[in-house]
Length: 164
Image 1 (tube, one colour):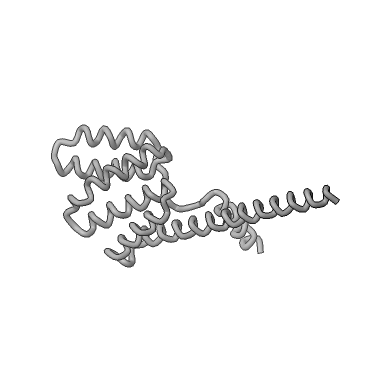
Image 2 (cartoon, one colour):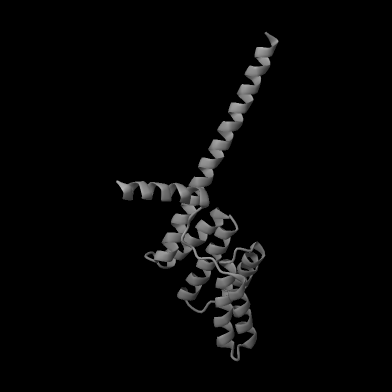
């Protein structure tokens, strides 16, 4: 019984906090990745460092970092040399759009990842987080609309009551 109650409270907490399993990245890691890109000796090292920097940026809490990461990935997407590399870049784009609240675009990109590799757990988990967020936002929107209608009806009823 206690385990069920704990699970219930965790799910309620996740509903209000947007609990997803996508990691965050802090500014120190981004700075380290930027240094790594600047110090890369070969083109291959630079490309690897750029992917790590892109990963760090789209996982940042700062919108400017996320947007920068999205731009970097979009600029390099057509230079992908394999389906695996394309899949990785599409996933990072999906994470970036998720972080920015563009859930429709994020879901489209996650679906493209799953077209490339249908059993990829990361993309499946991201897609579930996207769908949960869309559902949560819909529930909150309905609650706000219901409250607004209630206030309007209450105001009309109060005005009518004063007239009588």
